[in-house]
Image (cartoon, rainbow over all chains, first blue to last red):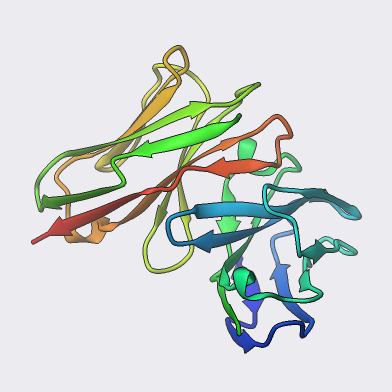
Length: 116
Length: 111
């Protein structure tokens, strides 16, 4: 089944403890992206990648890192999480390099992160 | 500053009603506008609009873009309780992979 998977789906952690949220897609998509969703603020893009080894900042990249070493995986790294990073995180992928501007974007199921 | 504004922010209707959701945008180098539906999970794609005046249609949902006035509308006819969701509008920015979303319209359809 074609899908975008994220792990973990739920995570409670403490301030400063490094964590990684994994994202994987099995559709051979060129484009991948991370978003966070907060009440009253909507969906905001954190980072995106239009190709292997190419990543770019979205609107809210501070406090996050990403890497795209292989096409299928796009992990989100929080080196030193803080409570203001408590949020619902979505990974997404799209077939073309230009991603959602020209092609359908498929979202993963979401990861609910709480930082105490 | 690039921005996408949706209205209303929330809407309550009864089954069978017709609703119109609005999305206005201000972005440089416009290419496309996207509509998504989000129920209690991840957003799912509805429409991509690139040309003015050409209606996209899927069942009871339809959408149209006005590039002169910089807005799009999403119409849902004969609403059903299953249409209850948050509807999101998004526009890619100058870097095509960079996407900006509106805050969404929360639609509640009562039986």
